Length: 463
Image 1 (cartoon, helix red, strand yellow):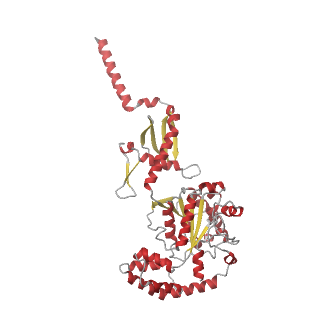
Image 2 (image 1 turned 45 degrees about the vertical axis):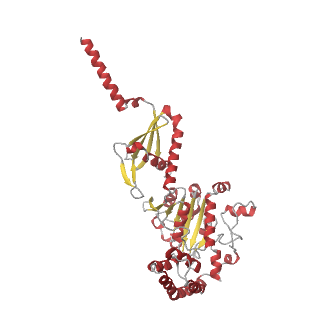
Image 3 (image 1 turned 135 degrees about the horizontal axis):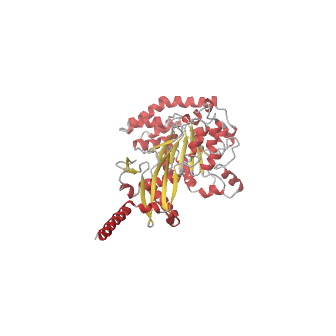
């Protein structure tokens, strides 16, 4: 009798143990596992692109939503809720019948995802699983299609906000022929990855936007970014401590990005203790730029390039020069259509005559007048006429006098013909050599080596 009770009690205990083992998955302790770490940065403090892809993938898992706890954040869109893992939290996933887990490990301010997978499943699912993560991320990015603006802080790291600038290439007040050539150049760049690599060049394009304040340079950068669907990295050189920090900022940028340095002519590197002119040049086109500059567009803005060291504007550092002049009549019509919805008006002939006489204002000034008087297009146009008669004549005379006194004629300006494009795909030897330096021009400019997209506008202004 005692023996029977002992057998019954032993069976009961074994039953409880079996249930506990199944519930607590104690069997996992005896499995052979392999761990794979995905750190946020590599040993060179360069961003690990796989980390961001894994982060997006994990945050999309149903298991995270069903877990005992998780973090909730407001998304970039209205009423959007985003789930995110807590530090040291573990989430399980299943792929091709195999069970894996992800742990959000934090150690020494370094964020790392740790993938835990059975060794017996590794050969079968590891590569397909990572490819699956890439596919999910690409689909997420395709649905997202939002551009971010990154700004550097004093700590040498980027901070981002949604980039919701309303400017587009269609709303920019620019000569229509020039605008079409810019579009064509950008579209050609997007399709030229194999071409650049065949030439042994980094797949990047650099632009110099120069002209008076208020002529739309910053808005044009925003329009470029939206046209390309590229993120924008706005580099504030005043917050950069030294050349090394500037390099680190470049290392942390991602592909498909527009890197912008505004008002480059106003930043005097000689006044800083550690940020040097050579450091800025290497940032524009140095060895590090060649290593991590693929699929990027660099944009530099300035009011004038007359007093800039030619080394900063040489081929390779700046590919395309675009001049942003004060407003002419064609640009004015674009502004009138955008701000007032007016494509034609009885006052247009008078305005055209005033513009042809040499009077002018910046697009920003004209735009402000139209905003104030947007309820009455006629009043807005009359206010523009008054402003042109009062301010435009004196500004035009002052500009002409300043150019005559301050800027001696450049030999390159007299010998350069910028009347059109040359095809980058030409097989002609001389053209291939020019393509190597990324320039589209008709004649050699020995001094500046630049290509100006503003040729037609310059000719009209000279007339």
